[in-house]
Amino acid sequence: MSPVNILNADLHCHSRVSDGTLAPEELAARAQANGVELWALTDHDELGGQQRAREAALALGLPYLTGTEISVTFAGETVHIVGLGFDADNAALVEGLRRTRGGRESRAREMAEGLARVGIAGAYEGALKYVGNPDLISRTHFARYLVEVGACRDTQEVFRKYLTEGKPGYVAHRWAALGEAVRWIHDAGGIAVIAHPGRYKFTANEEYALFSEFKEHGGRGVEVVTGSHSSHDFVKYADTAREFGLLASRGSDFHSPDESHTDLGTLPLLASGLSPVWEALAERIHRPS
Ligand code: AMP
Ligand code: MN
Ligand code: MN
Ligand code: MN
Image 1 (cartoon, helix red, strand yellow):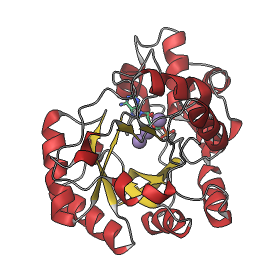
Image 2 (cartoon, helix red, strand yellow):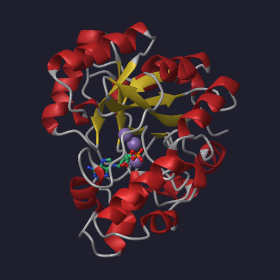
Image 3 (cartoon, protein in one colour):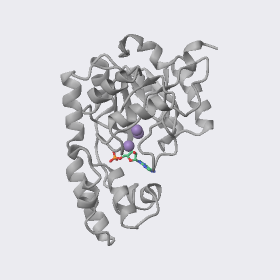
């Protein structure tokens, strides 16, 4: 077995700076307590938590990679692209993410109008109570409010009944283009990774197009082991990584102790025979002194 693959790397999670419920410092402590050996905070479309996450990790002796998860529209669907190991001060990346966040406010107001039409009043103000960063109001914050008012038992049920395509609180949105997101990450010295490919509702042809175009744009990695994947997906996307010559990543996608079924650092390790993304990023890792 290649020894690098036994590293407990967790390169995908969210803080209150996007739609998680913990502070970057709390996540760093939780990662370390769970045995994580290399960590990245990957808030949606936002770098506001990077410095705090890095400083907290290094103070705990935990190596750190910068991270983000960019919302992209591809073939009419939302796809997430994780960026790792980039320079968090890169102006084009910072500006691209700012533009990507831009439409969230008006989208949230439309979502609330849709929910009001089915009898759920005050959802915009309700969701805002859960928002840690006013630029980043997301469906997750609405889900928490709908659980609070008893519309559903848990956030999964809210997504199923209210927040996915065709449901009353769903508002279609155009995010960044695939090529833009990959270029922002790449030009900032990082590596772009397709997040949780097993979650997208693509046909085999559409998925092939996603991976092909991602590579043409300079994308280099894919999440193989994530909290959104079944054990079948672990095998399937390990094969995809080999087929497309992509680096493999691993991350829990942890959001909250109350909501997430996969905790930081608890997933199966990456299978041997894959090339881990952190090997290619060795020089970009911030290490404790
Ligand atoms: P948004 O960026 O506002 O569209 O919100 C997307 C976020 O909603 C994702 O990052 C997840 O955290 C969450 N999410 C999406 N689908 C589900 C689901 N079926 N169950 C629970 N959370 C979900
Ligand atoms: Mn999220
Ligand atoms: Mn995602
Ligand atoms: Mn995520």
